[in-house]
Image (cartoon, rainbow, N blue to C red):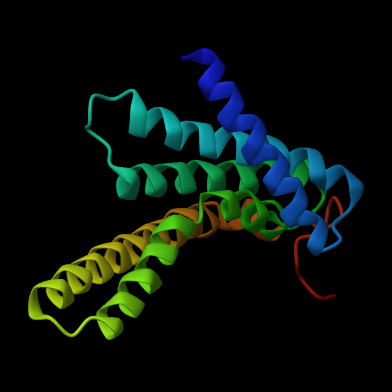
Length: 169
């Protein structure tokens, strides 16, 4: 069990570093991105696999995105970097690519089959996978956005110099 969680965290951290490299952040941001992604993705893994079926992928993704958002906002002042620098690359490993792939596969198969039973089967696959993908992404967006608004002062002061209160003299 512990090895599976560590493996999941490692691969999420590697993916987050790769995704963060695209936006050219400061060097110290890579460590934060890796740690936050590992924590969020492994939390989702634990919720999905070790809670006796209480959490499916949708609520587990929401909770994990909420934790990723909180960690990004709380760690951003330490790195003197906006929270979004950590938030977006840390969420990208949780994007439900297989559901998006199966959604478009179901759509193509709907178009290619003219029989009613086959069409309805592929329409079901298209709608199931599409709605699942949509709800996962919406849950991740909402979960990651809540901490930015809850910890507004921390979030917006992350890149300010010490003693700056935002007032113009």
